[in-house]
Image (cartoon, rainbow over all chains, first blue to last red; front, side):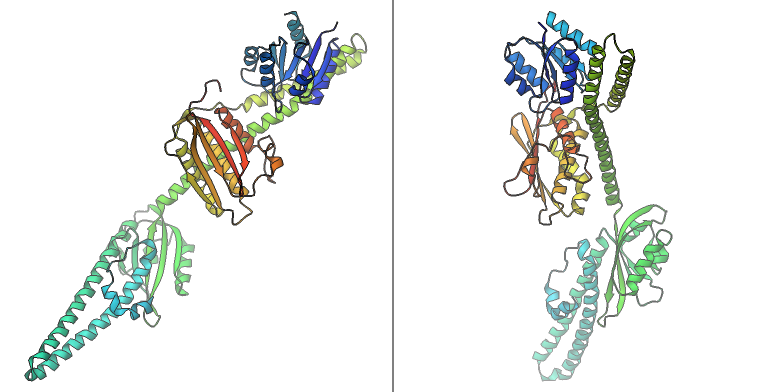
Length: 120
Length: 453
């Protein structure tokens, strides 16, 4: 069974593009335009890797990750952001995420990271 | 003014001899003095004549009895008394004129070459000329001719038309040193209305000018920093906005490449070009962002009240020009904070100028209030309250976003930068409408800034 990937990004085009890209790698991909939308739809015990944008209105990426950790979910999270923040990669790892990728993301790098997360 | 003196002739002797001298009433005082001098001279002459009369009368009537003798002596004594009082008054007023900080000079308007007939010590000090070099000389020949030909023409025109003059000018001292002065010339008329004297009043405004200039320079610097900050924030937002479609394009292209695996080599090649150029564009943005990287706040110990006062001083010319009033209610017991002086000044400056703009269109909305207080033991609160047009409810949430503006020439960066500065200091910047009118922007700054922020 193909692995599940969830994408949360408020930019519709980014969601669609990443979905098409990951589908070409045979992943099962679902996209959400807000963290709230994701939480409402996907129970935290449903397996699957989450690609999480940081800069979003209302619940941002950091806050979403906090909630995931707080819920006791073991979901692997990869932050994807257009913003180059100082120590964002460190901060992401400290927050319990698998990694941090700056947009635009290279397909192979992303897929390697996702595969790494599922092996873990 | 003349009427008053004549009507109250007797009273004037009894009233306090020395009015408080200020810059404003000095001219009035001098002209009053000149008028009164003339009146007094006449009075003296009259009482002297009367005294003499009485004396002579008394001599003729001496045989008729002692009562009249006493009356005559009294009148003579009264005359002397008046003279003494008048002289005392002249003395005090002369002393007063000599003690002023302003340079004062009097020009004889009846002589064809308008000579200076009096100048007080401050005038000599201000101009660097000595008494010998001033008395009897024409004011315009004395100095200033080289400095300000146009100004002199203006003075001459005013005086020729019988108008007082007032103007600020750059003059030279005798040694050539420049100084700014405010010159005011008033006219002294005799009872017939003929101008007999000009009284000049020269105030040294060099220090004031310098201070204003310094303030202007500081304000410019701050505005420059603000503009650079705006540019950086602008580029950062722009970079973010462009990164999103670049991300999408790259992903689409890479997905297509995978889908065409081992087929359509020409299309594969085209897709590779798209990918390469996408990455090139990303690299440009990365570099641009690096260039305008937001500098981290430089922390120093600050008294927020002093910082606000300084910022108000910088904004004062603006506030006055817009005919607005600023009030500052400061809690003097606030603890010091750790913060970046320039950045926090930017925030305050931004909030003040926004408030001024909100009150721009309304003449009765004039008051801008800044208040500092302790929200709790750990947090300082700064409020900027205006009485302007307020914020439409639907915009309250968008105010702090990038590119949100109501101003025709606004970039929509001011408030978003202000908010990111306040947040970098560990505080919050919010806005609300006042119950009556206008809006209040308020921010908090923690007394002890958390290390991780």
